Image 1 (cartoon, rainbow, N blue to C red):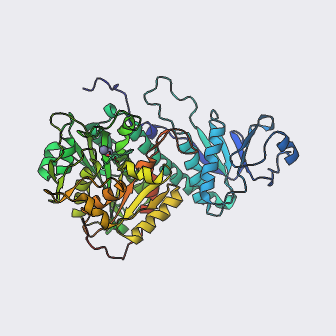
Image 2: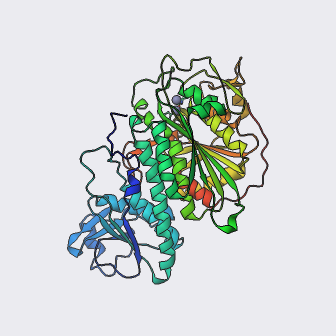
Length: 507
Ligand code: BES
Ligand code: ZN
Ligand code: ZN
């Protein structure tokens, strides 16, 4: 029994709440009415307003400036600057609106014409509003009092049907990101690998997914030396969680493609024997399982999106602890595919569990593998906190991911898989070392992983840079970001078979 965790604690509270969302062609009677206003642009015809008056009140229509007009019957004007150039601006605008009125629970938005179809517009508007109001209060005595209850979108009569479809997708995408945030925000004692596997087993059927859980005994039998090496000092068993989506419809007896996802699920990264310093970044290491949470959350969208591909996910879960039983520097681990790794730093543990995960994924010969991991501080040093690092052995795969990243507004930047960096990972005693040189740590980490993907199209997303935020930025809330769940859902939904060949390379 875990005496630190209340019986009724749920690590996935977001699954239990969701606003009512409607689209209508008629003006609704209640709710805070939001109008998007361009700088010096047209004002809502039904309101008796002039720019002279508005400027007197300090409203000029600058991006995300707002003015609340209670006398006019609960109206919010929200500035959109020179206009909404891309659909992503609409996601930002609804986020800005629900943040401008943090206690309001019912909002009514127009879906303006911003150059893309009503379905996508509605989807993004919902994502912005729902994600901006995400709030993880599972462990607070005083719960958040002002959740979003109703979202209404006013559209043209002819757009009703498409907008309706946008509701489904907006809700799904927002729920996926929220689910990833929930799991990632959960403290380490409230979610160890064993608990994590139970949660996945519990929620997966409702998303039309099947799960297979591998416990320590099975992990030993399977020869997952990376997972065992990282888990060696832990008081908790590791878990490898395999989650599967197989499209149901008869038309897809033969799914169009097979996609494998692999997620780093380090439920707490102390660094192991290479202990991390007790600083603020160490305190965030409960989030070192975000890659696996993002992978699971992506899986949660597939059935309802009607995805026609088969998708299999490997969540590689354990904590990384020091103790008398810990893996020592100089120890050599044998990965699932027989390759040996000299551990020169126990804090470079993510690549060890991912190596086993990638090797497992490869065995089913998928068309593509994507792994997601909070892998290196070096990625953050290189890119700051706005962009994740993307590595791939396939230009066409990288391009598809880059396009999905723009649509999701989860930005990635492709980095080089340059084999000249391999020389830093030489080991005298094993096939490879888990440490690179002093610089380019995100690159050597990615090159390490490449040794386990054979000739399969593979991409690696190092999400350490975007793992979490300290303060609210529109639809990004303080705490875990859930970065990648929307990107990957969109990528899988639109995935097109890759015809370029990949040659097996390694260090
Ligand atoms: N989980 C960390 C990477 C990390 C750091 C994620 C900061 C998010 C924020 C990873 O396991 C790690 O410790 N990496 C080391 C690798 C090094 C020892 C080769 C790093 O980045 O310093
Ligand atoms: Zn580490
Ligand atoms: Zn780590």
